[in-house]
Length: 413
Image 1 (cartoon, rainbow, N blue to C red):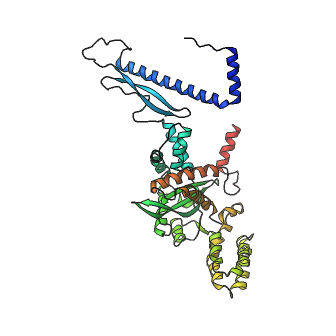
Image 2: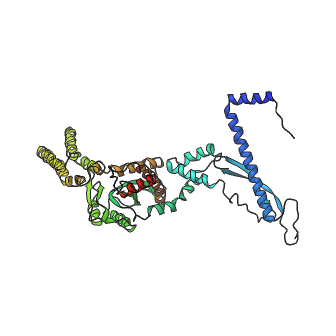
Image 3: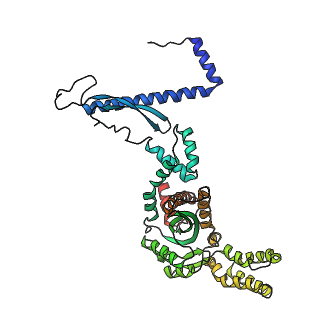
């Protein structure tokens, strides 16, 4: 049968499309879906033909040993990326021996959808929200359980990344800190801390070197973390500075594991400890004077500012003065390093920024499913942050470094 359409009818169709372009898009999607369904059904029919060794309605030459033949078909719904859900006719054979390779058994959508769903989940969309959106975006609803199962497939890749070799990384600075999450362990919800270490290499690029569960208040846990870094190839003699917030025993353990490195205590944490011992009416004045000490142009001026601070406040707030005095040397270690890097070395802001991203992503979940689930999320965020850090090196990195020399040679070539 031949289908024909007159010119007035065509003009009417064009005008209607102008008034409502969505009609055209719906028709186009429907046509693409029908064509895809027809193509899939045809390919699987040809696959069965090849399996049986004969075309439709033809008998096999050996009817005694080969009694298998076509046995109709059944409908199966399969979801394709950028196309949606299509209904295909899967052919069957009488003996049930045929299995199509085009549509994997028990699989209801292609692998790329699984990867995209996992990526959206890691980006911050909860499993319930993603389940609701999937029916609109894919034409088929993915259950929260399916999405969680997809994310579990990343466990092996995440473990490879967490335990990767570090021998090629020449790390000179280490930022260390811990962050806590609510996890479900053995059916009970508990707070679990995760130890995080960021390294800065010779080119000024930041790398997340370690993400592992452990008590952040425990010196033993930090020692094991540092030993793990060295076991994976980190050159301890290259490390020159560790920036931390003064957790109990951490500085001692760090210096024992990296004897050539110095310790820089976070000035923000020290300032908070000092101000906690100051009466409310004096906090603003004391804060300004502490800031003058920390942001002095030279170490000599910083020490002079502290002596003046001590002379002024030792009688009224001796506990605050003593607190600052005990931490002063560790707070001014950054003066021993290049001036252009001081702003990055004074505090643990670099690692605090990463921890903030960790908390922002996990906040909608409230409770993490376990340690592996936590690693999946944190590893994704860490890799994403590393991509951002590539364009923002620490300090003004000298162009004489081998890293930049290699880039310039490539550009010349």
